[in-house]
Amino acid sequence: MPTRYRPRVDPDALVALDTHVHIECDAHGHLSLDQELMDASAAYFRADHPRTPTLEQTAEHYRARNMAAVVFTVDATTGLGRPPLSSEEIAERAAEHADVLLPFGSVDPLRGAAAVRQARRLAEEYGVLGFKFHPSLQNFAPNDPAHHPLWETLQELGTVALFHTGQTGIGAGLPGGRGIKLRYSDPMLLDDVAADFPHLTMVLAHPSVPWVDSSISIATHKANVYIDLSGWSPKYFPPQLVRQANGPLRHKVLFGSDFPVLAPDRWLADFARLDIKDEVRPLILKENALRMLRLEKPRPDRPPGGRVAP
Image (cartoon, rainbow, N blue to C red; front, side):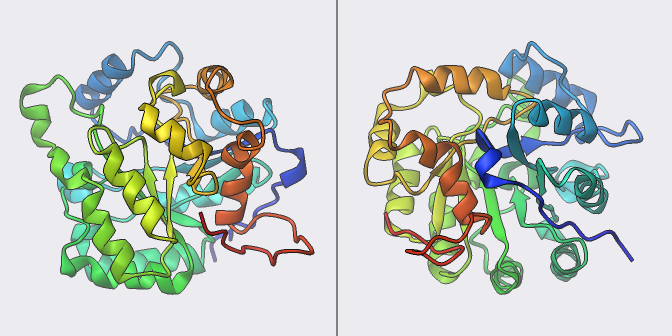
């Protein structure tokens, strides 16, 4: 039987909870992307630190900072024609670092019923808390009815579905972007999913450039939709996103770095200089994520995992 993950995160001890961290190298040295895509991504983000830390190194990186991290890979078997990292292995290894790591799984939606079966197994047997999808990299339209059985299963399981939205550094600068289509990451495709599966908790990853206003609109309109702020330094956030995070969406916005392409130290340093209200900062840095993941400690005025309307 697999080792089932059970979180041991202490919410009170956390400085922050990073909701967007990639595992891009497994224990056998296998990379999530081929070298051309890895090099293009590194050039796009101009990362000045190791690009492929192991899961154990990632755990130590966050433990040293009194932070927790949601970790995952992306299964783009069909889209890339490349074997993915094992979500099962990531979940089992994360169980050894359950004080700082929170594993999400990933399945290839284009595998149909096999993806549904794998998602159920990852949640029920391995204990993953959610699933990561990258529609452009995985080459699928999230609102295609063919994927309804997958979204229905994730809704039933009570897991989070985190979707890449907007521009991607993967394939950037290559001829034809290596065939990766940005339109699949238009967040308006996810508005259909959020409407059709109202009890599926969804996260729109990144500021969704060039569709940031769409993401803001969806998160404002749909109680089951959050936005994570990963992949961009806060100093480059669109001003309308900052305004909404400070007000109507203060309970719907999440800290995410996109480590290892963007280090949490840099993100947090730039966030400290952002014009965010003092009472909103802890919401973004950890409290919203703890509530979304049902990891918050019980409070007399609110049951565990209770949703807060924007």
